[in-house]
Image 1 (cartoon, rainbow, N blue to C red):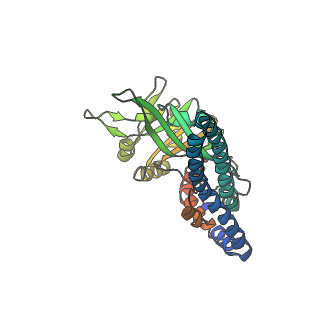
Image 2 (cartoon, rainbow, N blue to C red):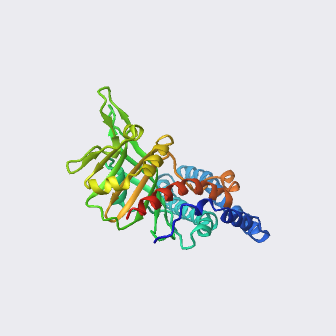
Image 3 (spheres, rainbow, N blue to C red):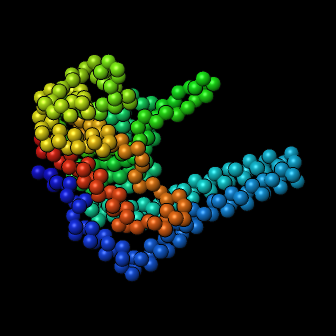
Length: 317
């Protein structure tokens, strides 16, 4: 039987251990040095940018025809510097603030911050979107090798002037856990975005019922108003959707839109929180406010709920 992980994110012993680690003299001195380096990385591009504008202006005046070449070379140098600086800031944040916290909870956790979860999983959750941008790919050191990422799903439309405009379909988090479920086909639990004037449910990027799917209803009126279940496996759908799962999803419907996708290989969950978690600090003030316990507070509530669903569903198989 797999270990249950839902309580690890509220374990008072782990909270105490993180606070002790953060407040130890050795670690406080280490984080002070790291913060100073990160502040320098955050402010230096602004200074260099101003200096670059001055040099570019003088090049245009004094070198005339060759000024454009000088400016072009400066743009290439600046782009390379900014990219390297961004990677360094990301590494400082991940290796010294985010990863140490996660390793206290699940020691074998890994982070590839500039990557995301497999595109197939993202597309199965946010079915009708066209483009997907994800980051903060965390692979937790649990039995499921659970994956986490931030996701922004979007598409483009053309306005009356034929200018392309970005439309965000989804912004939030995705969690996916590998699991041998025995499901034949798949099960989708899709949030209802709204109803039109005829009472038809609108799902937008989550996607309505497909040709191979059957819609399944449950006894809970609130659940049926908040979600639609589209499935190719009626038996496992009714097995999974017990009163506890329905209660959890009803509770989430009051907070944000949640979508579930399950097939024979994995369970995936999306949470439309309208923001990214764990952004890399972009300025001196945000760097100064960084702390191990602060990053833990961002994590524990959401991931405790994430794992509660996965643990309960996992018990069915």
